[in-house]
Amino acid sequence: MVNEDPNQHEHDGSSAQEPALWADPSASGQASVSAEQSVSAPPSVSIHPSVSTQPSSSAHPCVTAHPSSSAHPSTLAQAGGLAHPSSSGPEDLSVIKVSKRRWVVVLLFSGYSMCNAFQWIQYGSINNIFMKFYGVSAFAIDWLSMCYMLTYIPLLLPVAWLLEKFGLRTIALTGSALNCLGAWVKLGSLKPHLFPVTVLGQVVCSVAQVFILGMPSRIASVWFGANEVSTACSVAVFGNQLGIAIGFLVPPVLVPNIEDRDKLAYHISIMFYIIAGVATLLFILVIIVFKEKPKHPPSRAQSLSYALASPDASYLSSIVRVFKNLNFVLLIITYGLNAGAFYALSTLLNRMVILHYPGEEVNAGRIGLTIVIAGMLGAVISGIWLDRSKTYKETTLVVYIMTVVGMVVYTLTLNLGYLWVVFITAGTMGFFMTGYLPLGFEFAVELTYPESEGISSGLLNVSAQVFGIIFTISQGQIIDNYGTMPGNIFLCVFLTLGAALTAFIKADLRRQKANKETPENKLPEEEEEEESNTSKAPTTVSEEQL
Image 1 (tube, helix red, strand yellow):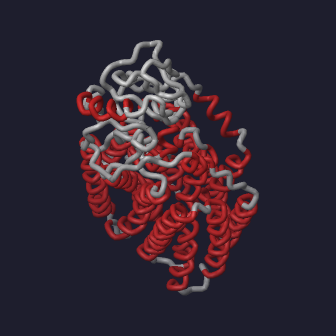
Image 2 (cartoon, helix red, strand yellow):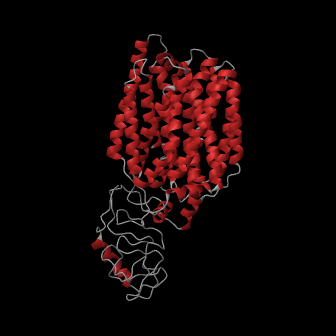
Image 3 (cartoon, helix red, strand yellow):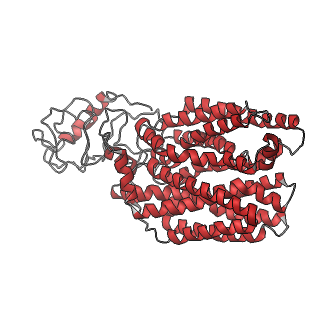
């Protein structure tokens, strides 16, 4: 975090404000006029927002009183709701502006999220090769993907609590460190009898994922302005999807399907060393670059969120409140159905393609790549559209319905014998299915504001992991016993249910309402380290107003 010196600007501040305040002693003050940080006001001196600023008048505890004195930096701006309850001057909540560092932060997060997602799917994308190398069943390899889902469920609440307690930087450091550690552990599993070691490395990476999945909407809210949050959330989710795409593309290329286990171990080691090196580099960058939050809140909603935050607030009570929100409960179910179907398809894609197109491991990976790349494009387009239109409910519903249509078409064309047709139908399905994921995050934040983004995102991800495990196991068993079409029809039924439930969600956009209640006092975009020469008030006081 970059801290602002509370004594900074004291000379400029007092000289700038005193003449204006003495201009007309009978003029009334504005509702949220804050004090300069020059001299602390006596405890009994305060101004009510609606009381005139007479030199001798008494004041409400929120803003300035005497022309030559000012409130202490820790004074609460209760009327305007713009000061952090426990603030002692590290950030000026009266100023709404964005920092250029925000793009560095979100791209760095996308980078280590990408690395972690690659490690999730690197086994599933060449399922048959790892089965042969370790001498285990397909179900055992499936569990290397499902352990990501299983680990998330019990660890969500502790990690969400840590996010609230220690902030974004601590969670980012922990997630990237565990991701790096898991990658290096896997390098100890390059012998056929060391399957338990690769399981251990994958479990460590799955724990890292708990520190990653719930962060996109939180980073977007803390670092980005009201007109950028949806785009920023899409970029943050984009990294995870890119990692899955690379996980489909690279392993079939680096690890060919050969019989010699020694040569196979050599090819697997190349993949493991590359990912360990990338994970290490990203961890170092997180240590150097990743900051807790900008010096100033980037939006009116975030400023109010700081003001409403209480160090004594019960974490469990927040969870209880969001579960009383029927719209959010419906979103939890619908998001879980969609994301769970995507997890199942990603895990079982290699198996489904190989059944219909034997020896096409590389093309199976490319089909997975097509699904995810199309989904990333859909996510970015959806994010930009939401920032401009704010039509969360309508966009979510349309994308969900198109996901169902895409899944049905993919199911009917998978066994036609034409790979190019599968590429087209899988890409169309992916555009909507994975494009829906950031929509769900942002819609959840709107429905639950001002509750923590970590809570809403975490609960959505728990739902996704639960349905992901159920769908992966169920569809895998259906494919083994009845074939791919019944397995895909199974997913179509539940996606249709999700689309129907989405229609019942009401568009209660609370964050948008908070942003519209009071105009934002935006400054031009600046570097985080730059500081203005005068202290800023929540509402600019002009000579005309005084």
